[in-house]
Length: 237
Length: 119
Image 1 (cartoon, chains in turn cyan, orange):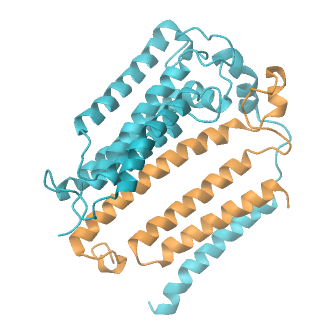
Image 2 (cartoon, each protein chain N blue to C red):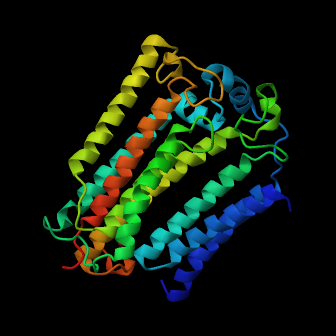
């Protein structure tokens, strides 16, 4: 195969795919009304779950099993990243990367910002049923605080045991809450095991804030463990 | 061009750009970046499909519950995209970890150095 055909093949493939996209684009007209499942979610969410945010109700309650699967996929990713990078771990006590020590500004700024970022992450995942946000977003924010701590003091490793304990206890509680839903309410991960409360307040929507807080902790712990295993790999050979 | 068409076109272009980058670049890191661009394009297209003109976000704080079905956009694609973003991040982390291992094995990130699977 000569050089020009090698360059032409991707272009031809993309041209074909682009014409498919163009047909989709040209023939697309947005719906006038919601389809049946969406209008069911729109009209029944408040009655069924008591959540203001319909997306949260779908993720945590209607499609709760999928979310459990998603968290599991994320856990698998963290585990595989740890496994793949385990062979190139830096020796204990040594900084993982060969970077220069972080400066005064970064260290002081980290000390000031990390509590604020953690608080904001907790706010985001506790208000997931009322405002845009939720466990995944909040977990990512919590993990960004961990990233800042890793950057400012790369020699200081987090306790892997703490991270994995948070992660496994959050996952276990999540599954137990789901099973309680089977016993005391309509089915697996039903949020009506707790009273629905008054619509729009922070302690409403049954078990949704609790489940989302657990998801937030789990996602935050998983991202943190990915970050630590990336950080703990040795740079130079 | 309305809002839906603009975002659909952006999404499709991002997918094509990302795939082009992944097919033509020889450097593994650049391929990973291209995949994340294509991933973003898919997410933009999904959210754009769920948008209904003149409607609001599916959060019922100012919208009365009785009118919800006629005033909010489709919440299902948004829930799907939330999932897709998180999984995309996991996949990117995994690709980066493998890229690191490949670099340690060969001392290079050029895909043409890895000839074991070539036929």
